[in-house]
Amino acid sequence: MTDYVTALQEAIRFMRKHDRFLIVTHVNPDGDTTSAALACALLLEDLGKSYCIVNEGETPEKFSFLPRFSSIKDLSKDIFTETFSHVIAVDAADYKRMGDVPRLFADDVNILNIDHHPTNDLFGQINVVRADAAATVEIMFELLKAGEFTLNEQLAACIYTGLLTDTGGFRYANTSPNVLKIASELLGYGIKPGELAERCLEEITLAHILLLRRALQTLKITHRKLTASLQVTRDDMREAGASGEDTSGLVNYCRNIEGVEIGVFFHETGENQIKVSFRSRASADVAQIAKELGGGGHARAAGCTIVGSLAEAEAIVFEKISEALGVQADE
View 1 (cartoon, rainbow, N blue to C red):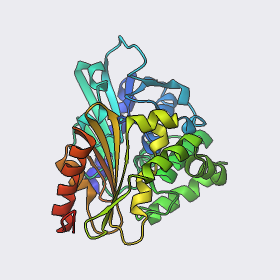
View 2 (view 1 turned 90 degrees about the vertical axis):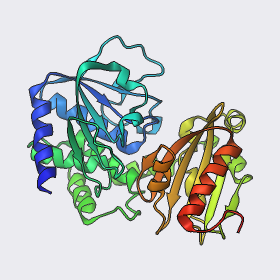
View 3 (view 1 turned 60 degrees about the vertical axis):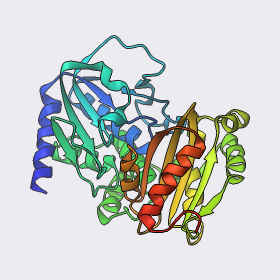
View 4 (view 1 turned 90 degrees about the horizontal axis):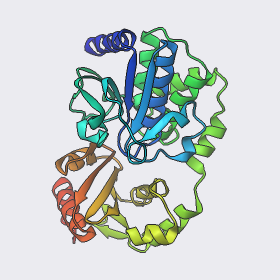
């Protein structure tokens, strides 16, 4: 823990020493990475610093209530001419999880890497990585405390939202005493937990339901009923009028089936490009499976991208699952 405390202090010095920053999230941002990036922006504002927040992929609109949301730039849509020497990467498990954003890095770039993934490869000059943290915002809260920043309602909303989404509404195994202690403190700053839960976890789009109807027709139960999987094609996305945001949570329908240990969701995002999401219930380490396929994540939630058709991706993934479970797909 001493190394972690030292890293927090190094991060604070880094933020105080420089004036202009690029804040980077991982590709296809979720609630935690979005909340962590916006919390980081607020801390930099507190220090009188300037920043630019960039990610590759559209940030889900359901997080638009968070402060500074409109400041987030999408690399695939916005044009950039500026390069940055001082970068803060949040919730990116490894360098490639930032997508194409590193092309904005100057030759003399220095990176502050803030993350909670056990697969993080420590790509920063400063690495504030705590694998037992439930979310990156948990680390942002500890950074805030270590740097004696002023906690206010806006920061509380960001940090609470990240905790809420990455713990599945405080239901997942990563819901630690520290998480609940932080959440309790944040509630004292005027945030409305019921409204945040409704917006971030409960409310779904019609496109999501239409997509779910199509996905359920592809349900496969394999590996002695220990694995369940769903698929969505580009045609499904078009017919449902869906965006990437509408696929959120589909993998959970697989994992939640009684007796299933591993849930898998295959999403065809382009020609010969399949995004794979994994969830596990108790014993399987899906982060290791994802890592072997070029991805990463957590023991209970991970993902990767596979080049090939849906059938090819399924065969590759099922083989890895067979190795992990010691059970063949057709048993």
